[in-house]
Image (cartoon, rainbow over all chains, first blue to last red; front, side, top):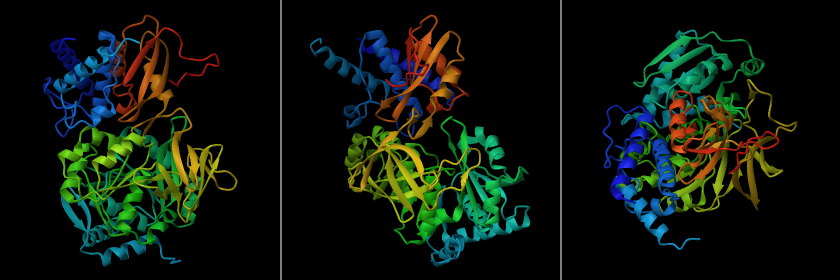
Length: 104
Length: 451
């Protein structure tokens, strides 16, 4: 999985999610845009839905079945949900550990 | 027992705490002395208006100095109060009709009120019963099992009687909304004990945490989903929340892991599960300990028992009845909460709803409502909505769609989200979509809603 294309497709999904909420006008959707906290460009519900979109696209495009919202992710010092860049790194990390497991 | 009406006792109590902070709203503090003046001004305004004892009066707003003063004045005038949140505005006209509203007090965001006559009275026998007893009343709305909202009529006094027993005064964020039994309960608990109600600008994690940090809030009554969102955003690291000494949670089932993680994040706080229903009021409750999901519920005015695995309650503060549905009480006054429980000694563990309702962050989603909207899309043959466990929201809505010509699930989700806009509330919109080729119904023509 190439990081740049992953970030690009995840940013596209984010644009769709921000558009779907429709309350934000002319928000610049970039891989650095904050996804959590006071300045977040998505509502909490929107974030949950977006993360599920990312999970679905990983399965559709890469055959990768992962649950991004898990105990490990939530207990990290630096939230993997703070931006697309951070989330992409987290996906690659999970993909790496999935790939290193022997096939069932 | 003291026979004075609660509101008289309450207003007299304001005088003894004249200089205590009653509310913090938009970062401004209102003392009990000032709140009392506002109540008196509202009583005068009501006397000068056409609003009379026994009238059904809707109040639209959020907790604010004026809306609370208005609410107290309406109780003092022995009106039947219908508190409504701005958030449910799409349903307001329907609510007005069911409650046979005589008048409406509408607060705007600057705390200014407009009073209008609605003249909706049709002498509903239950409303007449409350009027005949010359006590104040309360109407709350909750979704019924068919998805149609039910109007729950209470006499106000029995709901308030328990607050005469002095309890600890807290600085509290009133997290639950104006139209919620829990929000009303927190308000009257706080007023009775001369505590302070801090109103956040909205109910997002950021604004609630700002309010806690800025105003030294001690009690946060919340829901498991909100705690999850706080943990997701690592709010305890971004804001100084060390003033919190008690965090209460209710409205949905608490996942064990969330409770454990919340305990780590807030080591200085006690955790307490709450339990109540719009039909019965809020019970007194006691968690076995901070990390336990076992809870004792009851109090002097509540009896509990388990029948067929669900919790039944008989309460002194039970509602008079539904205005638009048959009485749910059995001959002896017991109410089936529909919550599946396991009993361990004096404690219960609440397992969740018996039915198919999907509880997303404490808000109920009725599969049929969502299915109806998704089925309107072209190419859909059949659709089943079910819940799927989710770490943040407890559950999310999943749509299993049978398509005439199968398309990728991501494309189908885009279509559903676009179509649902303006038709469904955000929490009802499916977060996950599966496209299948076989029908999601059983031979009995029941939806397969279980994963």
